[in-house]
Length: 124
Image (tube, rainbow, N blue to C red; front, side, top):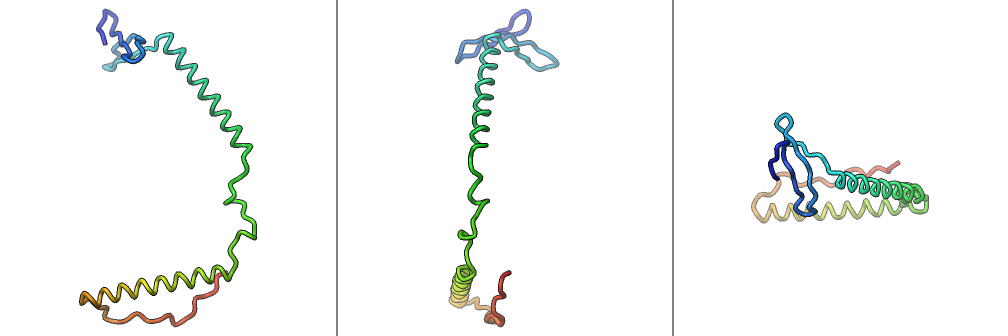
């Protein structure tokens, strides 16, 4: 940055391009040089073209497969029941381990957990 009669001249240390800057309302405002403006406009046009091309490609793509599932891909009742049974076994084992640890460290629960009185209801 160099001070001049009309404000400041700013030089980009990477590109060597120069801009004229002036102080306005306590802020330093710099104008793009003709070369900077042209490069900015060219880059903007290039990026706009890329966005347009990507949007066109996106329109040609199939919808995501997760949205359009066929009935063959859905789990059947037996598979869901097996999954629920497995989760129940895992949870019972986990809570059994917690109880063992509580007993081991002298912090046993006052009342033991009650087994499920009712079967798990069917899902609709």
